[in-house]
Length: 83
Image (cartoon, rainbow, N blue to C red; front, side, top):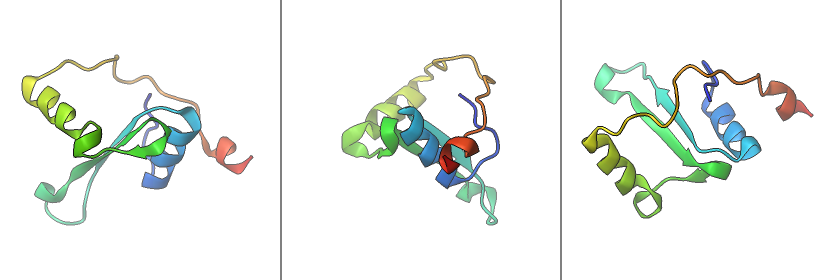
């Protein structure tokens, strides 16, 4: 699911609200080598070495294909956050 341009707070809200894992590419006001990615498991649970990060690194190194077709957009979540 693609949330579009969003804040870190909305990523974690969406993960918890939709019980879905999340990933967000981040940019920095610093040089490009400081850009990164934020990850969470379903329910906004953190990703660490003991909870999936090693497996993600191995899949990235192996060049695993995406699990779903990119570009699927979701409805705005702001209404869910307010209600």
